[in-house]
Every structure is written in C-alpha cells, then in structure tokens.
Length: 529
Image 1 (tube, rainbow, N blue to C red):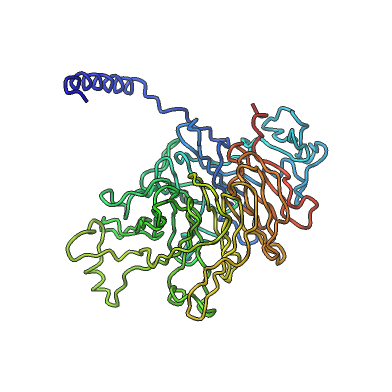
Image 2: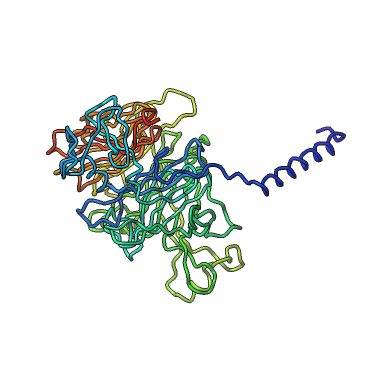
C-alpha cells in the first residue's frame, strides 16, 4: 500500500466501524429467529435413546442444518412419532387409509388440499400412494444449536460403557457443528414416554451455553483449537471415548466422555477433547476424513494383537478425498503407583509445566491401507470415499462406501496367525448410484442389508450383504442423506436435506410395501408454498 494513502484508509475504516457500532447499539440485527416447528435442511436423525429395548421410540430427534443461513441458527427438534402415525395410519399397519375416518381421528386429504393443524396430512402430488403431513403439529420440543450441524449420536451417562441404541436412563445427545466449529452436547431428562427435556445451559430462545460446546483441547482456551469442519462422530461401543473426523484438514479429534478435572478443586469433570491427531493426511498431502468404525472385539476369539486382548480399541477411518483408509488404536499413560500418577500426570492448566506429562488417552499406531475400488479417473478435487461399517459382530468384514464413482467395497479384516488384520479387498466392487455417502445396516430374520443414500440420484440402494448384490432401489425425496432404522416398527427414516422433509420407508417383509416409501414428515417443496 502507498504510504501516502494509509492515514486516509485508516480514517475511513474508523468511520465505518463507528457507524456500525452506533447502529448496533440502537437496533442490533441478529437475523431472523428460526421457526421452532419446521424442518429446514434436516441433517442428523436419532430415535429417542430412552426407549426400552424392543419398544418403539415415541420421539425422533432431527437436527436442522440451516445450510442456506436463512435464519440465525439451526435447531434440534423432537418429532412425536406416535401422534404422527395416529394422524393417518391404521394401527400397526403403516398403511394409508383410502378415506377420511374422522371418527377414529385419522384422515388423509386429497392431493393439493390445504392442510390444517386438525387435518395435517394429504396425498403426495407426484406419488399419491404416499402420504405427506406438515410437521408443525408433531414437533414436541425445539432447541437452537448453531449452523451446519451434521449428524446426531448419543452416549449413555448412566454408568454403562459405550453407546447403546436404546434403553438409556440418562442419554446425552452429541452433534458436530460446522458453522461454529465445535462439538455440542445436550442432556435429556424425563421418562421415555414424556416430552424430552433438553438441557444445555440455555436460556429461553437462545443457543446452548459455552459449557456444552467443546472447542479446545482439555477445555483450555490456551491449548489447541478444534479443527475446522467437524463432520462425523462415533461414540465408542466399548469405552468412554468418542471419535470425530473432520472433512477439512488432517485432524481426528478424540473425546473423553468422562472428561478431565475442571481445576476448580471440586472434583467436577466436564467432557473434553483429549487429543487432536493428524491421521487424515495421505502421502501426497491430501487431507480430510469421513467414515469411522470401531472393530468389534472378543477376547476369546483371536482378537487383533494391537488391541492387547481387547483392552484398547481398533478404529478404522476413511479419507474423504483419497482412496485410502486408516486404522489406529487408543492408549493413555498408566502407572502402577497412584502416587506416581498424581505427581507426573498434568492436571488442569499444567500442560507444558516442568515434570508434568499428559496421561490422557491418545491416538497410537496409525496405519494406512488401500481398500481397492473403482478408479476415480479424475484429477478433480471431489469426494472419493464415504461411510464405513463392520458387516457383522465378528469384525471380519469392513464395508466401505466409495462416493466417486459410486460403489460398495468389502475389506477382509480377519486376523492372521500373527494377530494382524488382513485388511485386503475380499470381493470385486459393487457398483452403485452416483455419490453415495451414508450407510445404515439392517437385519431382518437373519438376513442382513445395507441401506445406502444417494444424494444426487435421490435414491436409496438396498444391498443384500450375504449375496453382495443390489436387491432393490427406493425413490426418495430431494437430497437424501442421513438414515435411521426403527427396528421395532421395521421402518427407515431418511432426511431429505434439500426438501425439508423426512421420508419413511417400509422395511418389513410381512407388509406388501416393503422397500417402498410410504410417508413423509414435512410437505414436499415447492408444493407447500
């Protein structure tokens, strides 16, 4: 910059700042408050983990991403599924009544009819065999959570290790938030049959407090900050740990669910990020992670040697922009003598002090492996790998989604005589739709299936895992992404991110509508405008 113009530029900038400050004091504009009874860019889905095993959940949690920044925040809402199904479906059948049955409180209006809170459901315009209902009458609770939330998962805070699908008496919801890079958590209070009470230190109409957002290593503002784009999160099924992958950068963030001492002298502990490891960087320098899966481990059935008899986890992750997987384990520093541990392990504010070391759990023994797959045949920067999941409880087979070009890969993760996982492709790639990213596994009377969402194609692919073939395709809404299986009801919920709706797909082999969409929560855009 020309030195002669510097004072003028500084004066101009100062004037602008003063005007903005005055305007902010007189009439501060915080943007439009998000509606508390609507779906907008739904991303994460999670059935209420308070439900008892085998019992259908009363509520479905949905994270609204606010991806177009149309409001000043995204939201987390709880949909009352019992009220929703009671408004249109014959009990237990999940089939659309052909006529209004007002005496039973069920009614499905014709295509194009105006819905009301009393009559919220009508037939879908393009597919009249499907019922769609406006979501507002069924939203039981709403909480603001920030922008660009990605998914929902949970941990059980009732003394059990790992994440149980159902039956938590003290569940804690977790969601990575990309707009304000953080990992947020909310506690659920109340019995399973009551409206969930969400606690995250919030006041009326505002977002969760800073205490409920993890942003720095060990919750210390002077230590490493959480990397950009926290995208995927896996709560360990075997320990009190959680793993977060980031779609931008090389970071893998490790969370201790029991936390670290907050340094107040009260013994209080807050969940904390305890390690940020650069595991998602390939030899060429490409970064970004996506899928996460922990290998099932049985100490009596040839566990991998790296797990030390299943005493520590073996975790796999997929790169987002490289055709590579990574595996690693987790281990902290342990002492036989508690006094020695107290003397050497760094407490709150002691990281970097002379004679102190971090004894927290850390990422160890990282390995890179090639899953095979179809050649991307393009030098463009585009997603290559997506979700990963172990095919069954033995841990002998890892499923890997290839996003570009679309395929499902199968990796042999059996353990050899030396205790090392084979980690080699076991079958040729199974070609799928364009840009598959998310995957959910489903078991029905001994048969196992992979349900795969195809964002661009607006399809769900059903893969028979025993035969490793495509069994069916399901037409979905616009931009299908996150999936959640409702085992007791034999249904699949699917977040249509670009349409602001939740598709409901029948999974039961005992109903004629199996592998077909039967209903939606939310009206199909633009027909609701």
